[in-house]
Length: 327
Image 1 (cartoon, helix red, strand yellow):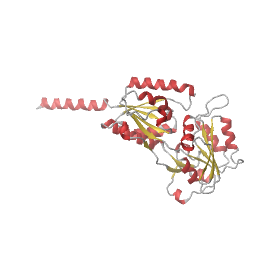
Image 2 (tube, helix red, strand yellow):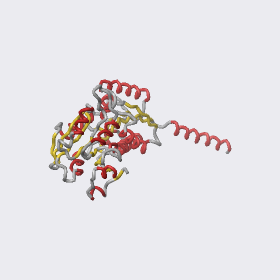
Image 3 (cartoon, one colour):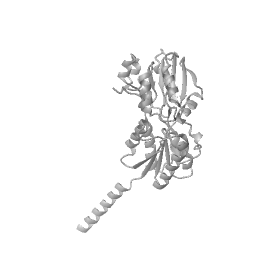
Image 4 (cartoon, helix red, strand yellow):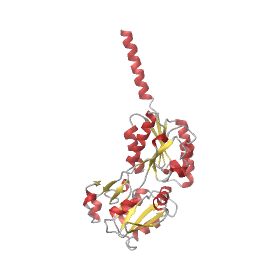
């Protein structure tokens, strides 16, 4: 009996060791970098579902800060990392990772889940692949303009950098038109890569009769010497110098020393939904294509009380009841 108990004990320890050390590997290839608030947010969402049961590893392509001519090299390095790691599943974060790597994965059997995709996946030649699916990101731009103008604004300015993501949003949301009418509001959209031009647009916004500034993406802006301007510096300068109230479309741009607020998307929700899809694939016989493409449309009102006070703005009661405040 003692020998039998010893054998059972050894077997149980062996099984425990296997469970501890043989977690399935999931590789997350980030288009951007770990310090970027969006990446931090969706990685938290991934970890909330996969963190305890799977071994998560990361590769950062850093395409917000690196020149476009270096993006392919980063993609090649990410592919090499994937080949060396041999993960059970890959998660591609945002458009650049899918743009440069998606088609390569169609020639593998590795399941792939993408997230944060603003473009139509068909444009990346993935529509016939059975091992790739994921989560689309659709910023709530038109709803934001309509709901946050409170019926008072007649003319608004939307500023974006000229990154691939920004260009995709302009194409998908506005059919490449930089001027639109939304709920009887004149909307002008500017895609800017030059720091001095961005500053000029902000400083002249009031004299150009804009009532509200919407801040989109601002992470690839460079100065006259082609030096990258840190995103935090762009946002801080914009908030300090804008003569008109600044709103935003993403939660990472809102705070007591940032934009006033907005109807925002969260990277956390993108990561959580992508992780739920990944978990189904890893734990069942379901193939990626069977899950179909998902869209994380859940937006929320997020505001800073301090910034609302600074610009003497009172939220409509129907928005205030649904809002979350950062301060």
